[in-house]
Amino acid sequence: MQNIHNRQKKIAVLSDVTGFGKCSVAVSLPIISKLRIQCCPVPTAVLSNQTAFDSCYIDDYTKRYKPYTDEWEKLRLKFEGIQTGFMNSVPQIENATDFISRFGKSNTIVQTDPIMGDDGVSFSFASKEYIEKMRDFIRSSDIITPNLTEACMLTDTSWRDRWHLRDIHDIIMKLSEMGPDRIVITGIPSGSYVTNAVYYGKNVTFVRQKKIGGRRDGTGDIFAAVIIADAVNGVDFLQSVKRASAFVKKCLMVSVKMGIPGTDGAAFEEVIDDLRYVHGQV
Image (spheres, rainbow, N blue to C red):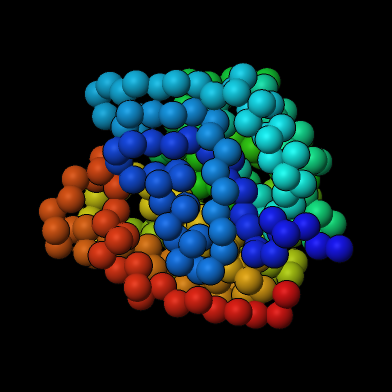
């Protein structure tokens, strides 16, 4: 008999809850909900505003994970999708591993956004131990969406200022050997374009969009939210990457038009009605 709490498709999102500067759960929840899936956050931290500002208040939730999720276990919740985002310590990666074992099903899709750095620079919490732990963690992931910096960190590839497509191809193939069967390396600078490298069906495809504006935080979270929701809805992966890229482009265009600062995130609310629900073959 089906548990009454598992009658609707659900995605658990293990990431931070940030009050201002649209990123993480503030982005994932409305986008996943728009695509007709219940989004259930598991906070890794609570932030007053995102970390690109000069200062912010951070309340770490690592020790609250167990009592929080114990209540879900009482409800016997199961999830069609599990997405991990901001995890700033090895114990949080261990919590995510525990969550998958307790709440995943045989067909649960696990997506990891291995947040560790950007623009060739690693974040302060991304120690050698953390990177090794993340490498182990993605072996159990179906989908990973690293940016180019994180892809280099995972594959122990030296950063450089100029990249050729053959270099990106080599990196994504190394990532595929770690276990995930669907990979997107996001935000690869390509002159006046931004390129996403896609690994799917043992093939590598490059999807690019015209660059719009300067740096804008949170766009990776928008992209990742569309990808995990589409995966749960059975949408073809390459089709999903293309439509996620197109949606991010719309978000960037309206944000630039409105004069929204890059630190404040993308004004996705203005165009979220353009994001269509698509149902594939699950």
